[in-house]
Length: 313
Image 1 (cartoon, rainbow, N blue to C red):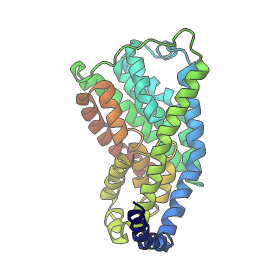
Image 2 (image 1 turned 180 degrees about the horizontal axis):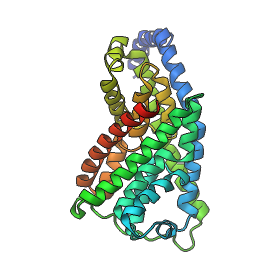
Image 3 (image 1 turned 180 degrees about the vertical axis):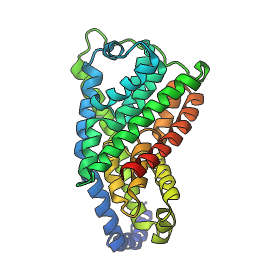
């Protein structure tokens, strides 16, 4: 046993030496710097966003949303979209909130409009965007306008084209249980959302750093040099990276080789369509709904980003 352990240690020495050389490589140093910078810049906004989201979920009465929305579905959609500006929520929290709204009688079109708007246009996201793009108020305005447009268009599209059999109604849940503390609910909700979103933030920062360090400039020039392909490329990247909306502006700001419109597409598409959201929607509303809704949302988000970017950027 001792001999086998000795051989294992001796065999690991050259590997450890190679690892030390790799860690000391300038490319890895650059990767490390970008990764840490993106994470540190975004972390305060992630904490604040999950704190507010947890407070809303724990302390706001369940019927507050239904009382605030107009009875007419076509008018409820823009009101629900605008509610996202004042009611912060991360992408992960917006899916169960939308399910809760539908269970309480809110028209699905309005619930879906809120689902898309809340993580994209809330104050925390807008402030983080302003910090990530200093001296560029047009980027903040463009993100607000493009995201609101997507949420309203998707709500109205559901009213026009949506089918009840596409939507698997979420199971009924009981509200706040007697005897349980809302502060405990707040703590548990914050803990879950922060750890969940924080993991995606770190992965997103690592992916952004890897993207900046390893992807050859010739590849970037191939996409970034084209107004069409640059938007499509960063939209697809946003779907794959699944960065939290409170942090995605810092990732977008690090993609300096791309046009403002392409980076706008990254910030508009990401909070509305990414891999974790598709999975959450499939688990809550059914796979048939998730794939159709996500595909339509991605198309509308890309078109909205292109139009608003051309207009404001």
